[in-house]
Image: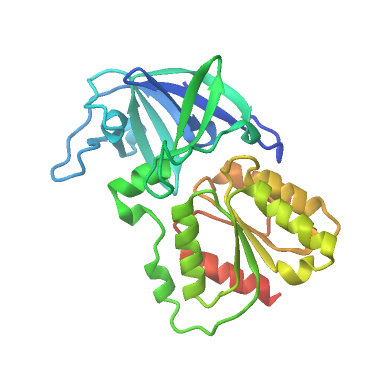
Length: 298
């Protein structure tokens, strides 16, 4: 089973693949998926994380297989089921699941953010919950799952140290990022790079409301000099936010940087069409600072 990104630009919609692990229903953004294939034997790798089943080579490309049942603390998977082969953060990873149900087209506005009773902000691996046909589907945070297995795949904070000593600046930067952990890491990195005035928003809707408030007050271009946005966010995604900003007569002058694990060739084309000034994959925190320097210098 192969997948395609079929959605129009900036509609605030996504396609979610519903799948089953140990009788429970989960979801993944179709934009992360390269293909879905039947399970095939893997070669175990010594001294790896317990959730790593091993490696295999479909089409001469080495891919790491992750036992999603183990990640979810539901035991060990059997030698059957399917591999959902994903691509994000410049990594190709196969996730072992029991079965695939189908694809649902939904609005980000319909995705419920998990409450504190379901997950803590920094430790949980659920980014949202949707209700379809009377059942709850938990959308998993696959970036968090991979970072927990291998922290080296996450934000490379050491890249900031390589930039050397930098002077502080009060230039206001607005950041829209729903993951509290990533939001904190990005903000800490930007502050370490000298950018002290960071306005944070938990999703695109919150960021857009701040922009509208500043615009109404007549202070927008003083209050927001640059916008950094993730793509995947509840209520309003980064593509919809970019579209609203770039179609506004005043806000369009604000540089927009899309900083997301989903930045691949297809998604880069979408961002370009929406008017994004720059797009980077999330591990590239050092390049993010360089891009910010360049855009603000203009």
